[in-house]
Length: 138
Image (cartoon, rainbow, N blue to C red; front, side, top):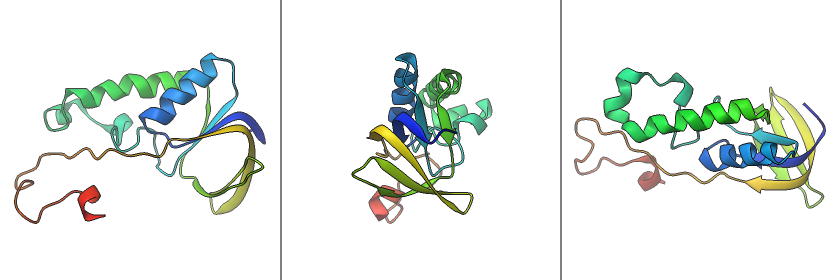
């Protein structure tokens, strides 16, 4: 991993992955930092671990994310999972925690792509009164 990038992207959901693919195809050096273990964000959670047998519960659109993750992996952006951002300086220095170590990286540009869209999975009783997703409980 380098100490400076053209673009540092915070978040490895669909927007962050698409941004990394576009940045790399434009010749920009890019780093994607994300708190999760694997890319995909809330919409495509555990995409690389999802099994085809789960398709009926997840829906066919879920597996469209597989192409996005594959393109991201092929694009060649640097990727650091399990990284917690704790400061974004005006000097474009991103401070983060990774492997229990405080680290920093300098960016020419920063893209914050941490938005989330809850993707409920229908299970028996999921529509009963008092049952809610994380967004409703927040």
